[in-house]
Image (cartoon, rainbow, N blue to C red; front, side, top):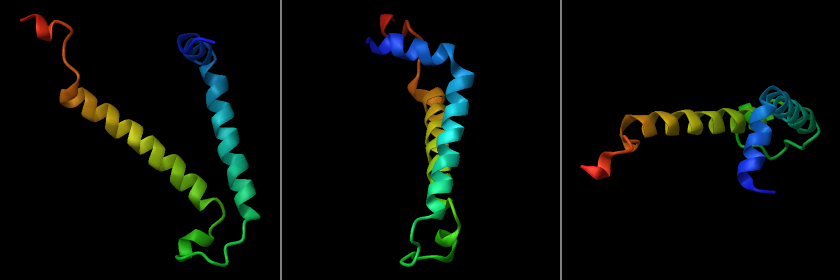
Length: 83
């Protein structure tokens, strides 16, 4: 399958993809309840689902900051090199 077709497939079904991602996040939080936390380094690591939520928020922040940085100066108009 071509990567463009795969992206279009997911884009056409965006609400379903978002619900699926939330479902996976919820499943990870539920699984994390059963993980042994005896060797956790900090008190917050004892909370169920901490690392799942932390990873999700970190990923979302990386995407948001990257888009902001890209629009700030990296992206330029298409005819930039024609001048």
